[in-house]
Image 1 (tube, rainbow over the protein chains, first blue to last red):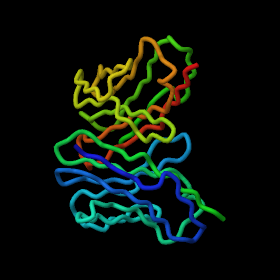
Image 2: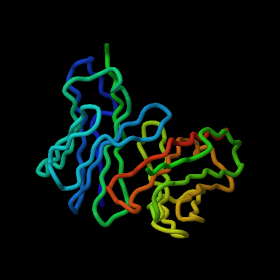
Image 3: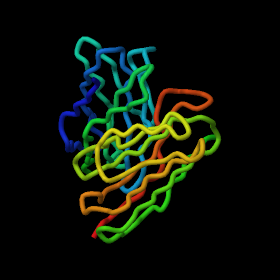
Amino acid sequence: AQSVTQLGSHVSVSEGALVLLRCNYSSSVPPYLFWYVQYPNQGLQLLLKYTSAATLVKGINGFEAEFKKSETSFHLTKPSAHMSDAAEYFCAVSSEGTYKYIFGTGTRLKVLA
Amino acid sequence: SQTIHQWPATLVQPVGSPLSLECTVEGTSNPNLYWYRQAAGRGLQLLFYSVGIGQISSEVPQNLSASRPQDRQFILSSKKLLLSDSGFYLCAWSGGRVNTGELFFGEGSRLTVL
């Protein structure tokens, strides 16, 4: 079975500071990994995905994530936070040959002026 | 381009009343379709998914049901709503003609059961 753990349900950073949102996964097969962002009362929007190509993945809005198999991690980073980054972020895992996408419980990012 | 629509966006229903949420996808064929529920602080819970017309897989036993009467239409229903059915319901699709691997989400339907 696959699972995702997001450490920290709430993260606060100052504007201009580094953003680091943590995601660890469990999968018995090579995983596909995703980060999504959700703004209030909206659906989820894909930030980036890893599907077994380059381990450092760049996404939209300046976000990137690195797949580390040895640590079973897929942490999301952004060098400099912007007020517009305040939202909820979800990590998800899937794999080739499965139709299921398993999501973490989400991390709410707050950006302080 | 592909789009996904779900409606209604907001719904307030009394306990014991029926429910119907509808979702349609445009611009692709034979998508995999999903219903998720999002409760505060609990992430996204997969309720149902469908890989084809009439094919429904249920992930969580509950008083909800799903149907897929057409290739790009997915309906979430209940005969009698419970208070615990309140939440934000998200429809999503993946696959289709060009499978890029990720899920694409609709804008969500907020259900409040009173």
